Amino acid sequence: MVYIVGAGPGDPELLTVRGRRILQQADVVIYAGSLVNPAILNVCRPGAKLVDSAPLTLEQIITEIARAHEQGLCIVRLHTGDPCLYGAIGEQMKELDKRQIPYRVIPGVSSFSAAAAALKREYTVPGGSQTVIITRAAGRTPVPDSERLQALAAHRSGMAIFLSAGLAGKVQQQLLQNYPGDTPVALVYKASWPEEKVVQGRLDQLQQMAEENNIKSTALILVGEFLQKTGRSKLYHRDFTHGYRR
Ligand code: SAH
Image (cartoon, rainbow, N blue to C red; front, top):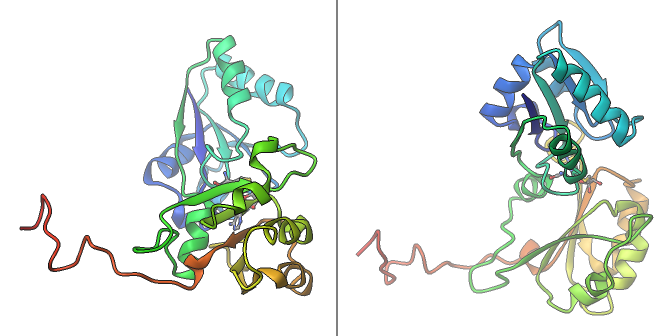
């Protein structure tokens, strides 16, 4: 069996119980070395074969998996955070389907959850924004025109921008077309890692914040009033009754 496992944001204690158990059993672990915290690999058993996928192509990764599968081995494909976000697992699953190699996906804690935890904030603010947009800036990987940052910024909701810390100047300029300059922003570098760093400021300072702190990768850009605002939910209000409280 092949398991596509979400490694979580970095701290090995943020692996799911299932992810950890499967990682302990694995014979072969193919991990995204550019992002997965190496400390997580300490969970693997001593004899396990560890393969960094960073220098490999899709074809090489699939060959590695197929070879191990033929030998009846337990294989983990380890992705950072939750594999459903920018994990490029679709193309791998397509190849596994073609070869009739069975697999399961084990979700993980995404970095956008770990970043909110680091900031002690909630993306959805009672009485305020009820929406968070997960996106990225267009770089070498294109983004559909209808999802340009300036277009998404028109919603003025919370935003978690992946894969874009190295483009902070461009992100700032595009968002400023629809968010006010004093909109709160945060850069969260390596959320949940020992070297985690949180920098907060205003949108019109974003580029400067990234440069001064030398943050270029493995960081999220968070934008929106949720960084400052806390509200009061109806759910726990004593005058609000619902199915579980009369
Ligand atoms: N599937 C992953 C995202 C992979 S894309 C997830 O759910 O988190 C890689 C991008 O994720 C990085 O460029 C960065 O923007 C973000 N990222 C991954 N781990 C992070 C961490 N620990 N702290 C902050 N950002 C992180």
